Length: 286
Image 1 (cartoon, one colour):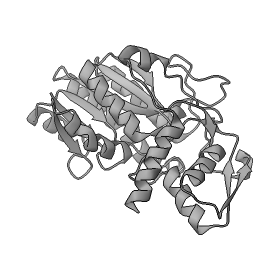
Image 2 (cartoon, one colour; image 1 turned 90 degrees about the vertical axis):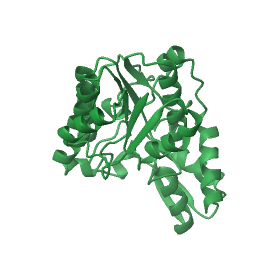
Image 3 (tube, helix red, strand yellow; image 1 turned 135 degrees about the vertical axis):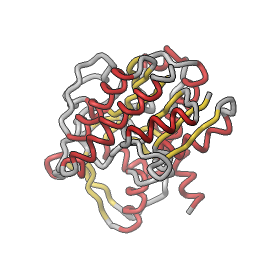
Image 4 (cartoon, one colour; image 1 turned 180 degrees about the horizontal axis):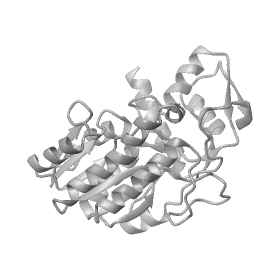
């Protein structure tokens, strides 16, 4: 198959590129804005037609959650409109699409892990536009999968893991929120799952994917420092109210992964094991 991967310069897109040689049965077209502007409907149509694209994995998104509150037009175009354009273009070729979405489609008021059929209620611009993108993809492409993920990190790009490692070396103490609960996701684990899904075949619908386990941002930061051998920085737990942000975050956004595990027989790593792998890579690179 000819597969278009968008957002190739991001965390997930970079991990996808690293894994492609392990799945050589397909031809991959890795693009970012320089190669394909996904906000341009005509450019998408031309690219998909010229390259005979059979499937699309859309890793591109506007992910600056707080900035999204002030950049609503750009956020809407990238997260809501563009996925719809991609889906419509690949549908005309009888193809399929995987759209990456987020735990931010929920308001975080649950007390147990979210399943795919739970009511959605985003409370930020980022969450609202990502939900609109989900709907646009499903409306425009019959063979489409939505994969919601959470707390994504990688050796690539800017993320919480890298920030905590950097600040741990620069500052004697840090405050990190302890009353927001979820599960980190190593982007490499998600990329592996996507390739396995492509190999086995698209089963349309909404799915959840994050690493296994449950922690707070505070616990996450403590684990990062422990695994990075950072000892000179004290981490204090903060309430959400003590660290106000322009965009509201879900207090509880643990995702239930039963559906994707059963459908595709995928084994998902524990968050701490995957974090250790990522940190070891970062330490070696530095």
